[in-house]
Image (cartoon, rainbow, N blue to C red; front, side, top):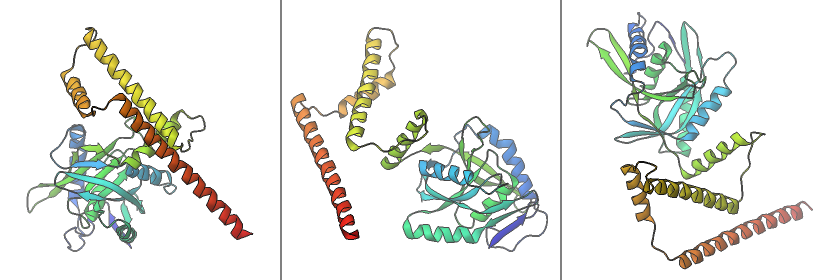
Length: 316
């Protein structure tokens, strides 16, 4: 079940060849290139697909790192998602057991295959798009593991998450491997960084906002609020943002702040998107929606009460 490869030797060839037993200089060469070039390219947008990461992926990686085995320096796992012409969207992931030492690395590829088959039953559209590892740097073992995943996906991406906060924050970086060297001679692998973008579904946005509220809570916990409370909070937040925009416009008209053409275009687009509705009609529509919300909330509470009474009657 384990796929083992000594640090100085190559594992199974990603193109289906036999296991090499001679010296493996390409790993050394790839490590040298990654260490020498990555610091210069880490802040550059290199040509390639944009990697879109969902919050649930980062949360899952951090959770697997917190639950890692005693003595383990990092965790690795498989990335799942979708691929199109211009981007790679990472929507899910799962950790893969592995052991690392200075001499060898062992990855339980059988476990990874079984987990992927289970995920396919739930989400058939998600495919293997690469793998992740916690840590700040690309190591020699990363080159070997990347070759294993090259058999499962074409041009897999490599995602690194700095869970140790070595750079002062939890930076997330994505890489794509590219061969380098002379054909027929020593060939190495260069990891080129890709642009990373954070995207989220509406449901994920609600979870992120709830997590952010725990920062100001003394107990570091926070519960879900009612629908009516969420509507009131959204209205207050909208009013606050409108006040900020109005203050900016007044400062520009008074000459206190230099006008920004880009901000003006954004504001113009925003105004054009607002429908021309009289105040009375808008108030009527808002009240109607609030009444609908209150009715749904009342029916929900009534249903929950009915279910609770039914359970007690069955037990009696």
